[in-house]
Length: 129
Image 1: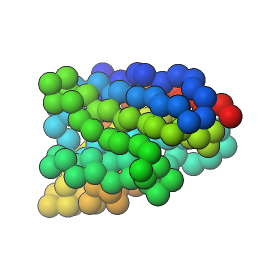
Image 2: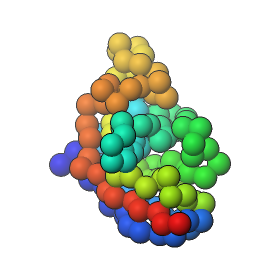
Image 3: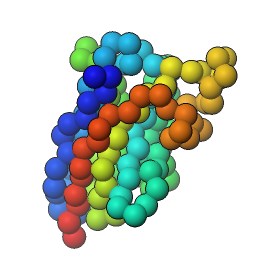
Image 4: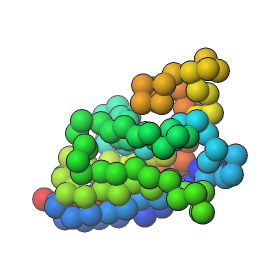
């Protein structure tokens, strides 16, 4: 298994959750790792990205509330979510891709969902009002 998410659950608006993505050593060494989310009836959208140098980016809707990080000791991608809102309710997926711009890939923050090679199965996050 290349990527496996955990840590989702239910929380009231204003609360916090942390989701995790355990990766194989190979996948964890990817140029770009990211969190996406998909709500029912909506397209999958990028939430946050982090590249192999540690540079990160966020969707405008989560800036200042979410934080992406990597736990190198555990080969785990982490998403800390604070001040959660009902509109954050979705299934959260982690993704990874090895291709940097020098190898024909897109810059990490600009990668579309279709450009990611590896995906986890997702973990559900529910935020009630």
